[in-house]
Image (cartoon, rainbow, N blue to C red; front, side, top):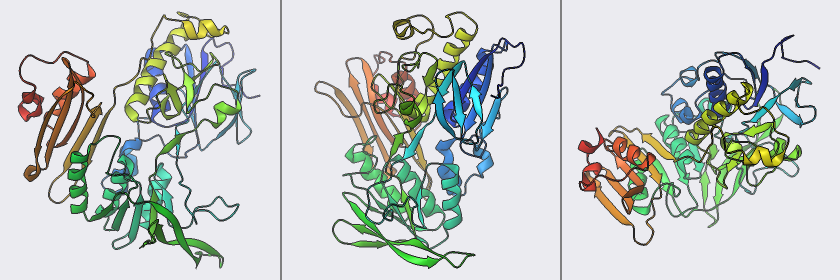
Length: 447
């Protein structure tokens, strides 16, 4: 068995499964919080690329950034194993088993396995008993997905994006900027239903249409049509997408199809190892799973019944866990507590109490960018106050929801000069100023 502990070393071995934003953030924070050498970090990631900012993949697809521009800083300390997949967790004696046969021991294990794109049950997506997508059909989740799309897109190519959430809108905009003829097909009543109300979504739809994207809402996709084509360099044939079939019988011709139908937490390793799993890997306020030596953060972690699936909460969790692990490595709160009650009832030390999520998006166009921000509860409850400003001529839409003396949510489109002050007030859960709230919805209030 190959061990990464140096002979005579007293440092604790922390193994992070997942080399994305959450795992990399944790490793960087551990380098700062455990600078005394009490922690020895190994990150194991499936992707062969250096860690990168997944939020900016659409900018790479649009041609605005090169892939290396969105790379995250290299690890200051520790080891990164890239292009390696963990296939099993052996909780006793405490090792992860990799697809190359390597066994990596740990004192603490962190699952930052992220999520997989949801592949909808479309007729023609897979052949019977097959697992390969037709040529031209892509998810949009990883750098490899992005690079494959970038290589396939060209001016005039017919692209259909399935899914009108944040990811689908971002992908459609990027493809349109590359000159593709883009159709965005969304099953819901309006775009970005999780973040926007109908008024804001209508403004977003007009802006997306101005980019050259044809938008269809309340549009259910039934299946894909494919054709056989000769594969390059081999004489064999492959299936290639030719059209997207809608439930009403209409067909959209397509050379490219992008599946932006959401994501599902990757919990297979945790489930096979016997850890508690609901929709995600269940963690407590110190990000511990049902095994006190194993933690989980990011898209795969479910805290207090909530799956966030966003970069901000993943960073919050990584920061908290860095202090938890650093304290335990230094012996301030003990390292592994085998008693379940102790492990899950410890009220000392750092705790994660949840995140307040703010979604930001910028859609560039020849007419100028449209900035979007949405946060908190945007649907008012009975008794809430709503302050609402809309100016279609300026592409401006601003709405905030107030409960008592607290700002509980908001939607902002257009010039977002006011978002700074609003976000600080909301994130801090601070009482609103005695002055009228209207000034927070102007640029003067956002300085």
